[in-house]
Amino acid sequence: MTKTNSEEMSFLDHLEELRWHLIRATLAIVIVGTVAFIMKDFVFGIILGPKDMDFPTYRFLCRAATFIGIETDFCGDELPFMIQNRTMAGQFSAHIWTSITAGLVISFPYIIYEFWKFISPGLYENERKNARGFIVVSSLLFFLGVLFGYYVVSPLSINFLGTYQVADLVENQIDLGSYIGLVRASVLASGLIFELPIVIYFLTRVGLVTPEFLRKYRKYALVLVLILSAIITPPDVASQIIVAIPVLILYQVSIYISKVVIRNQKKKEIANA
Image (tube, rainbow, N blue to C red; front, side, top):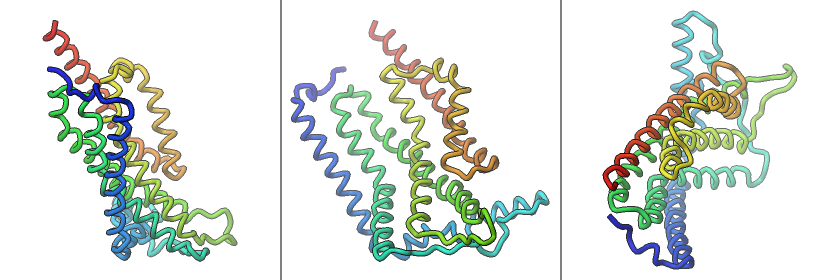
């Protein structure tokens, strides 16, 4: 099997090709973002969801705490803070950036598709056949991460930070941009973290990572995962553990993926020998 004639393209040709892929990906984000901009009530209903104590995550944690027989703040009527806007362009700016974020999230499969179209001409024919699987798996992992960030990381962070007080005299009146920034960071960070198996797949393909390497440094990865969990969640042990568990599962899956890649490479080497 031989590669296509993409290697005959000049450096400027590759840059021109990359430019058009980036233009199409950006256009997709703009189009979807425009739709999200128009559907303001629906989009902000989702964004402001974790502010409501009727949010599914709070209801689940309330039932779990009640079943165990412990007191919890998740059974309250409302969170003790108000979301406010204190700048002239604050709400409009939040509307714009939220729409762009929605466009990025929803357009992710197409962005991955454009990325694959750019690199696929330099691959072998049998490798290009895996394009559909790559796009589906990477998109699925990203959306799972987004849902995890929205239904787990965001409500835990909002509940903790929104109810935290250093003194009774200090009231929490959260700025709109700060609130949306927290939700946006939680969702996007979780979506990217869930792409770990894909990253490990490519690093293994180019020879930078091996299953032995991943197993050897598993304990260091555990420390990094806990640190990462502490960054994207409130500083309480329960929240950090909740976030750390799926990331550790992804790390273990990545070890298996790396093992499969190495095994397939060895089979190809034997077959070509």
